[in-house]
Amino acid sequence: MKPRNHINFLIRLLIDYLVLILAFLRTRQYIAGLGDVFLSLFNLSLLGISIAAWTVIGMSVQLYEEFRTRSFSYEFIAILKTTLLHTCFLTFLFFYCFKYYPYARTFTLLYASLTFTCITVAKFFVKQSLLRLRSNGYNIKNILIVGTGDTGMKFYNTILSNDHFGYRCVGFVDEQTNPYLNGQYLGKISDLSRVLENHEIDDVIVALSETQHREMEKIIISSEKEAKRVRIIADYHRFCTSTASMNLFGSFPLLTIRTSPLDDPAKQRFKRIFELCVTSVLFITVFWWLFPIIALLVKLSSPGPIFFIQERQGLNNKKINCYKFRSMTSNSNTVDAEGRYVQATLNDSRVTPIGRFLRKTNLDELPQFFNVLRGDMALVGPRPHPIPLHQESKNTIQNYMLRHVVKPGITGWAQVNGYRGETKVSGQMQKRVDFDLWYIENYSFWLDCQIIFQTLMNMIKGDKNAY
Image 1 (cartoon, rainbow, N blue to C red):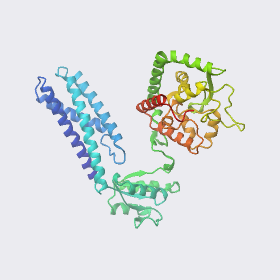
Image 2 (cartoon, rainbow, N blue to C red; image 1 turned 45 degrees about the vertical axis):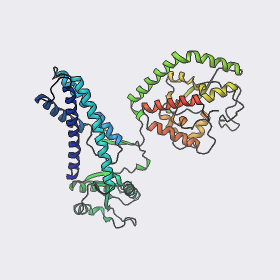
Image 3 (cartoon, rainbow, N blue to C red; image 1 turned 135 degrees about the horizontal axis):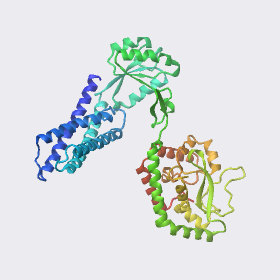
Image 4 (cartoon, helix red, strand yellow; image 1 turned 90 degrees about the horizontal axis):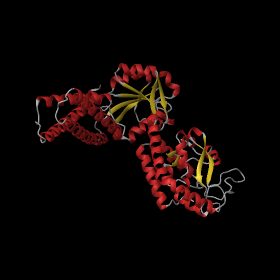
């Protein structure tokens, strides 16, 4: 560890120790008010054990990693993990070792709450202070870029446009120079050892093209001889998204260019259980009387079946039967003479009077809760499209098929943001897909709750794009 990095680590650790001590003292002061002693030799020993446990746990969950180029949310998750594990450790300690410790539950809950709150605030303040310092030229890391091609220059421009990251490019090394280096060319790859000896460099960034990878071993050996950390920009970076991740498969590093929280089976199960619970409650409390009323109105509005069943594409592009209350006349054409899907338009003559109300309030979609029970659909997800529209869009809309890596939904992020209904204007379908992909990559339980709430609001006030 570099001396500068070592100092940064110690400062962060000491700040946490100070917070732990203050939280401990405040907790003891509260418990002393309940009739216990404020401090004793045993209490001081407990503080020492707590600090030691926090240190071990924090290092285990990477709490003291450098979050230089990442948002505070990553550090927040590490704080939360450390606090929870620290609390579990104290609970175990009181349950098995210190059974007769007075006010054990009060101490644990208050101490954990104060620790979590204060450390979160302290680390946020430190994060903001460091960002300000780096923007003013302090707390800087020096890097050397190996590669003067397109990848190297793009990385260099990223550094220049994000000075709060706290990186300074010392120069470039490559077999040939580049006219845009402004005197920062330091030599060929064969000169790398000399360059590392003559310059203060923290990290070596390898930004070579695939054709130059035969030089990789030489670069790594030379850099590690000078105790420099090597970071390699994968040649496939241009295909990666903000959710890209790297995992080891045996000894092979595998780069996943696009990930989703729903790749986690535990999150899939939680989402499924939540949706089954909501759907079951709705059938028990509302749908048992609402469905017969809507069915009667549909039947009286025009001849034909109550339900409209349409084949659509679901998870992994498998076909599903999507259920709706029929809102159009039964003899309506859904494709034109050329086989293209005819979307519903404003004042569409195919829509029945009751159907217009059902579509405006989204009530025509309610039978899709049967799809949720069957497991074909989810409450929230990308809306499934009719087969003709699907076939047309998959060949014309960028990343369209990526919507099918999750279950389609009754409602979705695109719909609550105004991208539902007709897509006759150029770019509307692409926008819908972009919103769907954002949802997939940023899924959370609370985001689902937000989408459900916004959908209910749209049902109450009516959706201007539903016709």
